[in-house]
Image (cartoon, rainbow over all chains, first blue to last red; front, top):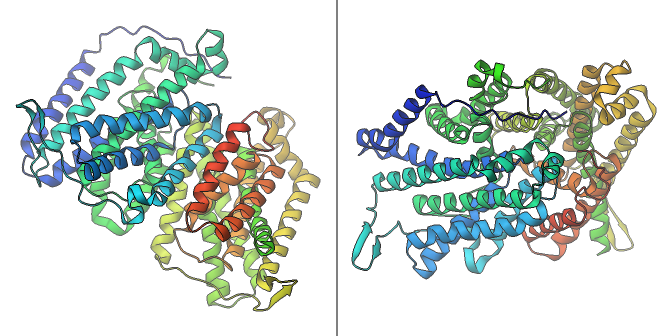
Length: 337
Length: 286
């Protein structure tokens, strides 16, 4: 009963959308840091939301192939520990650690992905959930590398990036968040652009077919295993990048820094924004982070209210925030049922 | 070693109650009930207050646990999941709602009961000594109650008309509807039944494990592992999975220090699913 969506080449007459994207982007890159230059608290919120967006974009990419991935926390933890260990024990430069963390997380995701992507439906969901817990326990028990439950403290903030005597990026100043702000913002924009290109390329289309139906994909000559693996590897890579950023941003790391609940949150951001849109996870991450800060004044009941909001939200808009937009355009779409 | 095997069997029986409830809800409604562990936790708290604090009769309290949790399950089904499944265009989104209910229950517990770890006095202090194996009478009672509940459940599913309707619903929703079954009612009943099993399990586990508001998440993950090993939506699979987990956990805690046991269990579960992607007894179709 899976309805096959017909890809309609939409006319690019969405000038208002373009203007909105441009204005929001401009505000994000220039406006916000200009206003809150010295306000670490305000910068902190956006930095956190940006890193969460990077991580959630990865999860979103596994939603594109029709899988619910609750295991992103595992790879965030792996990325964070890679950075922390390389920085603290080997004294490497952060600018080397960042890609290395992503690549190690991606590689591990690739290796784990080969067997587990064969699992279907809820088995995959529950297995990825256990994966988060398993990696947390592994970090707890690999005492010689990760210092177990004592965690790794005093992770240095990024130093200068130099090629020869030319300084490309100056060293970060302790206590100032502005450089972190630009780092995360620029990374998020690069990653968003890359994912957008991927999503609208042939690879992305093939991935979307996987979501519709495996059989359909097979019969159109798509190598199912390959595209699943591509998507999952990129997902883990982004998780690793996000973890690496968190490690240097928060500067301390414990095996319990990223738990099952975090994996769930990454997935929630995608759900809340809407799974059919690239901007969905980013919208979800920003919305949740800002409302999380907004609800801080009722500290004790914070998460309870959060849960209530989530339930009400899901009952009211079960297909995410972006479905508000979808409703107006239903004429062009095949309605399910 | 014998001691560990006996402990594993005893633990496995209580776990089977949890796994059965989860697999029942999953089989009937195709929803992974994330709040299952939290429902167990609620059961434990009811047991703590009625039996531990007000000194009611243990068995009456157990029945009250089952009834209250059945009510919670019915409310969840009626007001959350039914409406949701009707309007959502992607069935997987039910996961989010389930997670929301889990967070809600956990936070209600956290707000009303605090973070303190609690315990209830054992039913009976006597310890049997059979050929060098020590079995507390407490555990025997838990074991017996679990067996009785599981047998009652199986009889209900296999022998009554409602059980028949549930099994039919698990197989094919549309056809069951065409046969004149009130699907809404049966779904609600299934959810309530699954939740009440969680309540009974929680009440029983309260006797041996500490009671605290954060215990739900771990129990949920354990329950997921059990039904993954055994095969989701399959009743015998759930029981098999529960016994395997109980056994491995009990032997592992005896031989390997600390948290490495669960690392081993997770790795073993992943390996098992690589070899048998649907668990030991799982059927294709989910």
